[in-house]
Length: 161
Image (cartoon, rainbow, N blue to C red; front, side, top):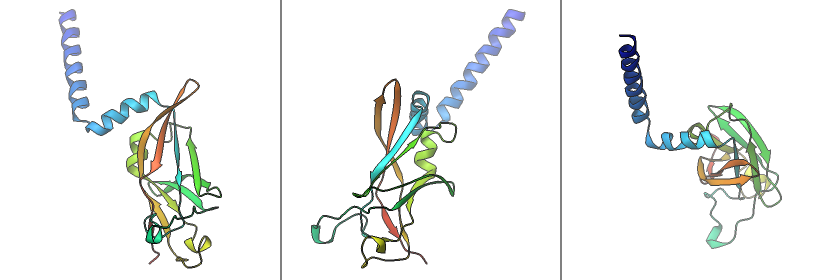
């Protein structure tokens, strides 16, 4: 009798776990597997000096927004921040998987550039900022560590109201 009870318990536990796994959204399930493999994430991109969704005027090249603050906001809290280079490039290494998981990072977080655009071009607004959601762009190997590469989906201007 004890052996049969143990077999039944295992069957029910297996069925329960199967139901739980099947109810996860496919994207989160895929990213969950990646979360198990990845220990860190690198968020990198370029902030351009424009209020027109990173598009230059009349096809002209848009310069990078140098020395702009870039913040990673998750659930209204700033999780990390950095400053852009002279070319407007930035990189944030997220090295603590206990503070986030990859699927939460992609769905619950965004990048904010609170530095006024007028600092890179006096003809641009002095109130408001740039914001972008995040996208997963692949992985890279650094030694024995696998790093998730995350990029801005595309910055757009949010005026202050």
